[in-house]
Length: 263
Image 1 (cartoon, helix red, strand yellow):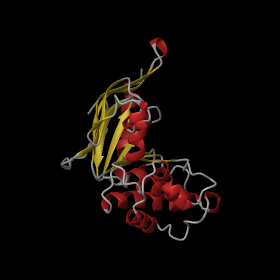
Image 2: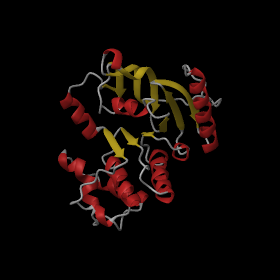
Image 3: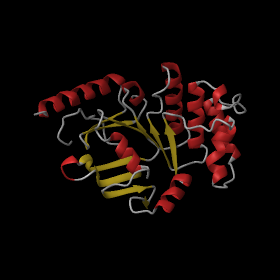
Image 4: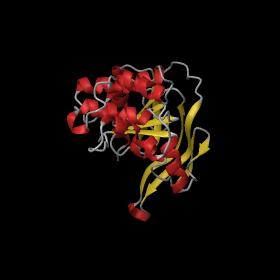
C-alpha cells in the first residue's frame, strides 16, 4: 500500500461498517515553494465499533488526518464522512453542533475545568448543550472507569491517570458516534496509561463505542483492533489485532523504507 512497504497483516479484512471515511483527502499548509503537503489524497475507512490506532513518524500527517476527520480542521480537498454526514463541506455552526452531539474528544492535556468537580467536568458538554444526562449511561461509564469515589474531587485533587479517566468519561457519557483520542496517554506513567488504554478498549468491546487514537507508542497501539500507518502524508500500511512486537517490526520497516527513499 502506498510508496512504503510497511508490513500488512495477512488476516482477513474485518467486515467494517465504517463510522467515518475519507476519500482523496488532501491538506496543504501554505502556498508555493513553502507549501507543506500534510495529507496526500488519503482514502481510509474507520470501522464502527472498533478501536483504530493511527501511527507514523513525526510529520507523517497522523494528527492532521485525525483533526480533519474530527471536524477540527478543514481539508484542502477531498471529502470526510462521519456517521452518514458529509462534514468536509459543513459550516462552522454545523460542525460545532456535530462536535457537541456526535463526536467525543480525549486529548493529552486532559482539558478539565479546574473549578469544577469531576462529575461536573464529565457532564459539562451535555450541560452546555442543555441535554439531559442519561443516568444509566453515566453510571455505566463511571463504574467502568472506577471513578465512583472521585466524583466530588476537583482536578487538582486527582492524579494524572484519574484526570485522564475523567476526560475519557466526559467524551463517552454523551454516547457520541465516535471518539477521537490524540496521544491520550502521553502524560501518564505506564500504570496509569494501561488503565486508560484498557478502558478505551473496553468501551469498544463492552459499550459498542468507536474510537480512533493517534499515538507514537507501540504499546498503546497494541490495544487497538487495527493500526494504520502514515508516512509523508500517505497511508502506507496496516495491521489487524497486532502484538506490540508486530508494531515495532512495522515501524522499523517503515523507517528503513524512508531512509532508502531519501535523496
